[in-house]
Length: 269
Image (cartoon, rainbow, N blue to C red; front, side, top):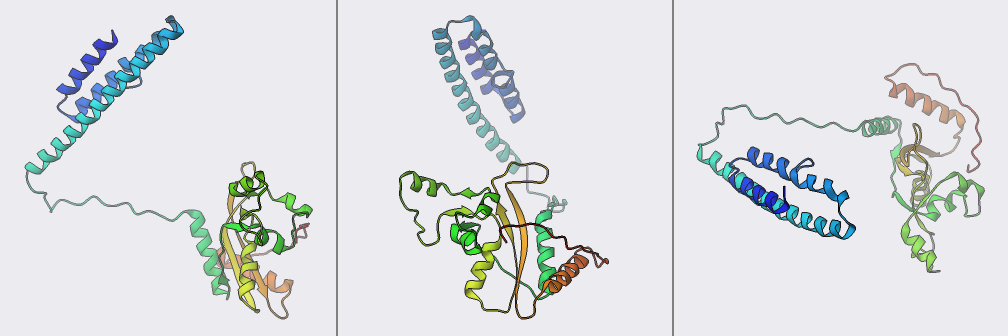
């Protein structure tokens, strides 16, 4: 079938459609993935390159014209359907309403809120900080200067504005606090909190962090952490053990929990 013939037949079919269902059938026959317009591309292999360009452009023009005609007809039929429904009479208010399906909180949100409530019941304050951090708060203030080998443990997302400044041999806008990045841990929250508060301090810092890592079953480019900070007199590892054990006991519905403290090597601490 010739292109012009397809175009004329499609125009007539769109004009004759009286319902949305009929119009959708016309779309499938002519403009769908297996429609007549799409099938015209199947014969491209038998034409020379210049012919393919010319015919392809012509098909795209016809396709665009038919799509615009289809959308205009669709709008017309929708307005017609609304008008007909309104003319049929008033709505029966005695009919049962469509029940809304309530949403639920994401499991991560539920877990985070549960953890926060437990720590708050133990006297901790929930502290927060920005996810876009400075190099100073994320590294330097935590005794991880630029030359420190521990920085290799973090695959950091640096912000593009920093890269542009470096490419032009310009200094970043933030002069005293270094470059901007997506925080790699929630420890900057501790620094920001200690700048504004004096001991005793008893906080947790939950939040989202970012690492430029290859994703697998146990790694993702973003995840959540929750860490705590206690600064007071006579605080020891015994306090830490008691708090963690008490937390997990409440987290697992007051079951008796046994914990084990296992030594490990963290050069950045």
